[in-house]
Image 1 (tube, rainbow, N blue to C red):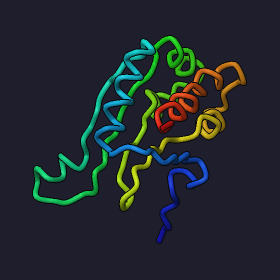
Image 2 (image 1 turned 180 degrees about the horizontal axis):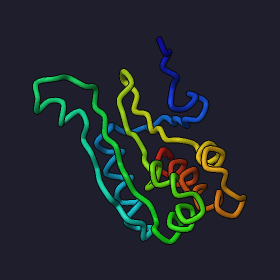
Image 3 (image 1 turned 120 degrees about the vertical axis):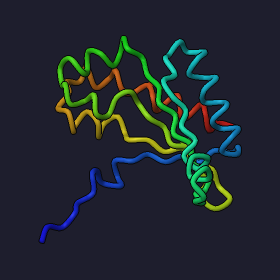
Length: 135
């Protein structure tokens, strides 16, 4: 019998507290992505989809976005990085708090054995989320 192992350590996930509701945080994030000229690939309301089939899920929204200019060189060097790209940010309710969670760029760089130059292509998510959760 095999034992399942997690896909990544919890330490590889960055979570930040947002002072806004899930909906307000998602709206602000999508505006920021567009304003920075990045591509917004999808906004998936996971809790809304759960509700459509009669299930309950805390407010949970996945935002998928990126920059082909930054992401393409990463995928050229490490084709399996396409499993993790484009970047994803999960905005979710944890009790009465809104959290913004994503895989750390360093974890992604380690997983795909990226050079320092290519790893830098992923690091923009940190200042983006810092600005997102600022009051």
